[in-house]
Image 1 (cartoon, rainbow over the protein chains, first blue to last red):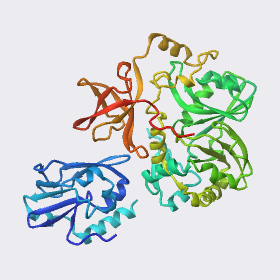
Image 2 (image 1 turned 45 degrees about the vertical axis):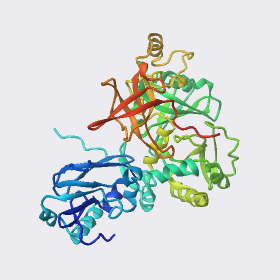
Image 3 (image 1 turned 90 degrees about the horizontal axis):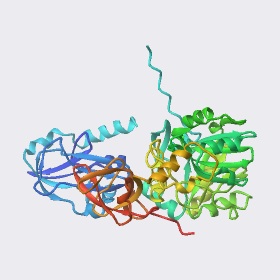
Image 4 (image 1 turned 120 degrees about the vertical axis):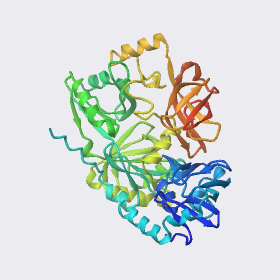
Length: 131
Length: 369
């Protein structure tokens, strides 16, 4: 799988796409595949504070509840309402239509410290080899 | 002092076949098993709408033989095995003297002197030792589990898929009856039983033929929509059908009456382990009772989550999760008898919040006959 250029990724398989101070955040295709069929998504309200490395919501598969961790610090500006009705969208289009939240980054430089696309692809290849 | 090495993980004869099919493997009760192949939700729906094939070889088979085989079976189980005809099976409980469960199981009668107890994988060794300890009868107990591959083909199309592969007429085999015959040329016990709430069969045969029968069934059923299904769907199917899982709805602290399993508890039987305790509980009245619930606010009430009523914790979820066919989030829990009536509203504590749920009758799903 080729991951989108311009995204940055965490070791917990979240992605962030940042433009100036506007950030879009989601989970990667590797993450949705590991989770299996997604049945429920719990997201913070607009206005909630994000702290890099801290859980901001949960993604639930049939069998398990997984926390999602903020890749950057900031404030939530939008929440993807489509996921309440159609959580399976997260399995279908995790990098596009199934973004989780949008945020205003408090420190836009934070994202640059995360893995870029090439580094993440290598990281995923390593994870897959060890399974 | 050296610590004993942990038991190495066990594999069924189909382990390589599961991996070839892209099965996501997990450890379950000491076994390396597929939790899903194409996804729990499509697998669950396939069983309800067409058919699914499960490798359940990890289950245990305990053979009870001898002149007093029936007496031993009667002594350790809750149901009445004397009512079984040849080639008939019954669901039953393996009981402690306190009237609680060592395991749940199926009792199959081959002859008056030969029974099979089909038990949970995770309890097989425990059950075997327990029955041996209780065996003061002229009977032998043998753990024959390693001698059988067990497959379950379940769903409305199961008969149609299996019939061309065997000369045994399948339609006349009634639910919870079995026979022996050849499937794809392999000698099998063909049992009209299962753990999904659908029609279907469980096949028991020599592991030497595992891949041939597994591949043969998948090939034969492809046109009917048969797909391989893992333990994830096995669990959602049984939960949707309101069936108990040992370690969740039943264990060595629960009695059959509390668990809604009075129907497999035959107090008219001569003495059996736990009979006295169960009678005493019936006379006193129950304190708690297993109830089904469905979520009426967004959220999933999962295993172990607290059940709350009037601001107080009153129980906990024994099994809970999505019901893929019904399209709801459901679960079961022990609640005080006063709260067990369908229609009662309770709350489930889901991490930092509570979500409302309603008690509903069991089973959640019943197949149309």
